[in-house]
Amino acid sequence: MALPHDPFWPRAGDWPAFDGNADAVLLGVPAWRTSLSPTGAHATPAAVRGALSRYSATLMGPPVVDLNDVLRIADAGDIAEPDSEAGIASVIDRVRGLVPAFVIALGGDNSVTYPVAQGAGATGLITFDAHFDLRDGISNGSPVRRLVEDAPEGARIDPTRIVQIGIADFANSAAYAQRAHDWGIRVITLDEVRGRGIDEVVTEALEVAGAGSSPRIHLDVDVDVCDRSVAPGCPASVPGGLAAWELRALTRAVASDSRVVSADLVEVDATADTEDARTVRLTALCVLELLAGVASRAAA
Image (cartoon, rainbow, N blue to C red):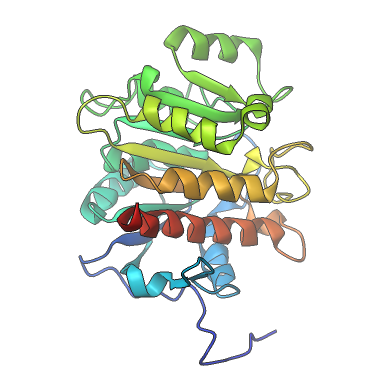
């Protein structure tokens, strides 16, 4: 059904092509071929762009702010075949070419975190994820390990500058939990998030990931950290995960820090979503939360 047109109710999305001048830029990275679970995640960037038109870009404040008035937002299109070695190199090069704009990568499965973080020159990493992503090999279950071990010298991330938020019971193995511990990764479980609260968790995460000189933090938003009722289009989401409002609040809070230079939104399979597209819509709202965070920096 076509959405109504109202000149007094402008819609989000439909941003111009990137011309080298932007505060924030979207980039589609439709990876899916190395996913451990069958997925149609390559269809998700287009679906998220479509879902953005269901929302405005207006924050209620006070004061009321239209993100389009305070940010130059652009769209850099999609990377073709990002799963191949050549595709990974293309992602890295393309992200480098978008910096210093804040890069929002629309996945695609979680494998995109590996090249996007490298392209952004990340020195620290924050993940919202039910899973460690520390597996061996190359898949959507290995990007965190790959950033520690496989990235070229100078592009590897010190594991003591990695914070993983939302790690869930019954979604991981003891072996990978031990690997995270041995490497010095700061793990903030789902239970700890709820016990401590979002503000306290975000403050610690930014302190850890943003340590050192000239810090550059990449944020990996794996939507399967959410409860399956709000993220049924994520193959690995489970009952009891984060509520939609919790993910949105975490996303905006982290993006409000100027040390955060890039983010990805991953693990949504648009072809497996419910009829009301609730997972894709939540992902589109997270795009807007990222932009809201970036916009808030000038007022901070």
